[in-house]
Image (cartoon, rainbow, N blue to C red; front, side, top):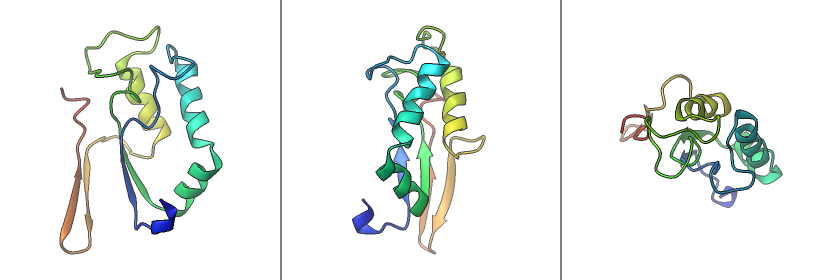
Length: 117
């Protein structure tokens, strides 16, 4: 992606996969392992140091495939804890939905469809 020298990137979830990459994230420690493993990769870390990025969660980086607020926990990892870990690991602040302008003609809306199913 860096060869295109983007003004920014928008990552719309599935940043890590708690439920189908070993070890399965059935605890907070294992979920954090997934984040640390992914975002410590040199190419990934260097890219994010250079280019602004916006992040939104989806199912696999919140709990498991097609999850929502009423999903059963994976071991001790609940949907609510998955949301909390996402906010801890990604610089999104308190709101997972937000908007920003790019120039005078473009407005981006990043929706959080996972939390409000």
